[in-house]
Amino acid sequence: MCDRERLKRRYREGHGLVLAALRRWDPLGLVDESPDEYDGYAPAIVGLLDRGATTDDIARYLNDVIRARMGLPPNPAQDHKVAEELVNLWKRQKHTKRQD
Image 1 (cartoon, one colour):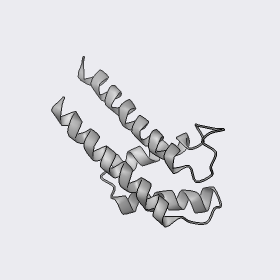
Image 2 (cartoon, one colour):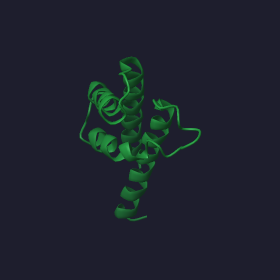
Image 3 (tube, helix red, strand yellow):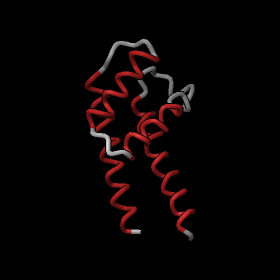
Image 4 (cartoon, helix red, strand yellow):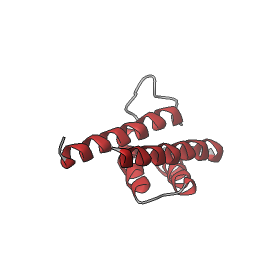
């Protein structure tokens, strides 16, 4: 497999991890009816994670999404929990990449 194909595969895998975490986050409670409801937020999160975002950075982003885009009251505990999961998943994936 060439380097370009390997990079594409890793991006898809990382993107998939983010999508799965966003579906568990599910602040609107719509994931059963509309599983792709939060997919639009994944590219921004992938970008943040690629640039080394911390758990607090990701939690702030999720909080902004909830308040500004969804008009919901904040849920900092849930945002932090999902943000921590995302950062840890990203770190594990990055570590796995180095072993390829």
